[in-house]
Length: 274
Ligand code: KIV
Image 1 (cartoon, helix red, strand yellow):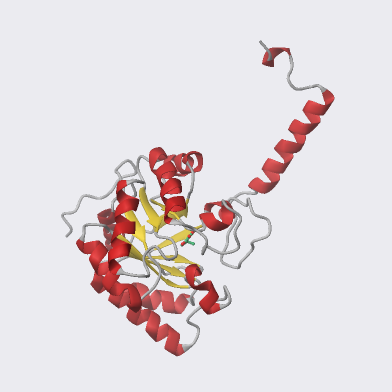
Image 2 (image 1 turned 90 degrees about the horizontal axis):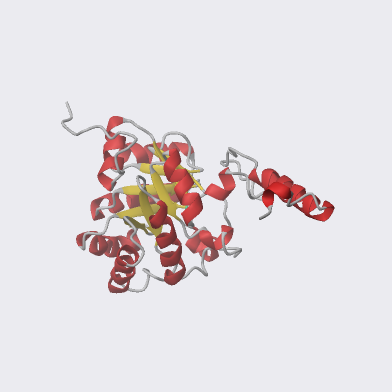
């Protein structure tokens, strides 16, 4: 029997909490956030983990890929999120080229993310080529989340955002990489856009939790980009995306009503003036 205290909704979520959640069979909920207001809402709602993803490049900055994101951009977004959060574990993406050149540079980037932004952990994309780098960051006391499958920072290598690891060889490499990441000390691994059966195999092969996006139901947790699941973006509809609101419509209706009221002189009324 485990002597570990069961996490409650009020306890701060730590990297140990999410590992324990896997052991206890409790699914982990993770969403992205990039700013103070949204982060505060989803933390209050009780999400376990908030990822300050470099998807900020797409949904906040309007770029087509995550490649243009800089460490300064990510430190800014992460510090906004950290100021709003009381309970969730806040993980920040290290952006493209802030960790790939040397392990030393990676450690400096991870350290800045912790010291200047207040992140609780960092996420890096990739397998075998960055295992030594991950070991160095973990050895310095910084928790690391891995990311395998569709790794968007490598979009120019892949040439497409289609499902990864459908072929046997890529699937075997991915399984090997997951085990290497676990040995290097990651506390969790994101599996993006891979077949559900492969994600299930990885999940049962490693002791650390897997967090899926487009990777089926057998992962230990799930992550979605907040703007996508809130229906803010009408034009992005991959099969894995479930929309929990239609905020694009709600916002459009609200703004249309405001414009109408301003034009007609209905806003502001007597009660709304000094
Ligand atoms: O940047 C991001 O939002 C991510 C998630 C999709 C996992 O890495």
